[in-house]
Length: 81
Image (cartoon, rainbow, N blue to C red; front, side, top):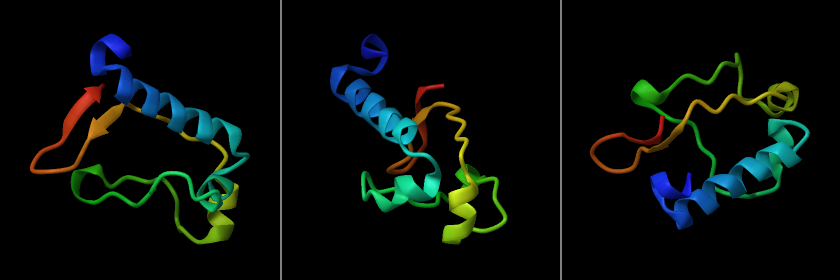
């Protein structure tokens, strides 16, 4: 990963993955205040839940990472597809 996206970005990706692994569910992860998670829009929208209320997020205990993307700015750029 370091060769593909550089040491700084690789460190950030690993850190975020470690944070997610340490939480027992997504509700716990959000309550830690780590990072700035937010819902995505447009063609990146696709969270598989009926609701984003706290009770539903506590039930979310599996996260599937499909890649790493820089979605800021004019276009979406896959860093790790």
